[in-house]
Image 1 (cartoon, protein in one colour):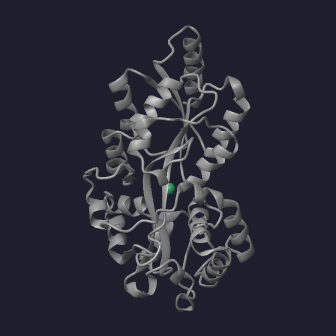
Image 2 (tube, protein in one colour):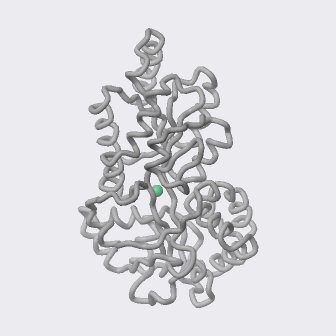
Length: 337
Ligand SMILES: [Fe+2]
């Protein structure tokens, strides 16, 4: 399967040389959501531009783009998490894009000069309704309070979702506070960090631990699941929008950027602008249970409706990116493995 994709790409590169300049787009993607298929095929239907997609882990893709250098067939990198997008920026992989469409459609705090967020997800607190009261977990700071000793479970501190959460705490409350917070959370662990967000949700529902953080789309996915046990697990948990009285709930993004050596620049910018269109924005919401970045867009997703509205932290995605390394150092010092 992978080999075939590579062959297709090689062919596409030849086709470019032969002059089929803007009818193909080579997309390197670290977003692995089945529902994205429709997002891509709709673009081809609208523009006639065929998308060749190489999927991989973000680090592998970035390494590959670096190795390919000036000869890289890659036009765009699409991935999740501000930290990863910032890494691609730091490696000098992206080229600036000045598009009035993107500047108008995407709020300023959700774009940089060379990469753009197209959907957002919130990192919320979940708790076991039988053993924890909502008032005990109103803020991220509450996760470090002694009252939750032995109750908190978590995925790894090295995971970008948790790095970005801590980066937001550094940006909002300072480094010393962030370190005290990380140490407080570690002191409250019910078990060593393991598994993904869905595992934390299931552990909280089963009472193996009582409190955790999770990205909203994992919760929405379980709400909409065909499996009765998933929906039953959701009934056991409460969901809190943290920091509503202060900075707002931490959000992260999925996004994309134009690559420096893109052979199909025009098609690539067209695709970025397409991702900000009403149609594409609805795919993010309906398909992967994320929120559109375009403001005021009506979406139809019963799970997101159930979760309701909240005040989001408006910290620029650039700032989130800036504190990643510091966040990792703090987690390491705190023993948040
Ligand atoms: Fe995820």
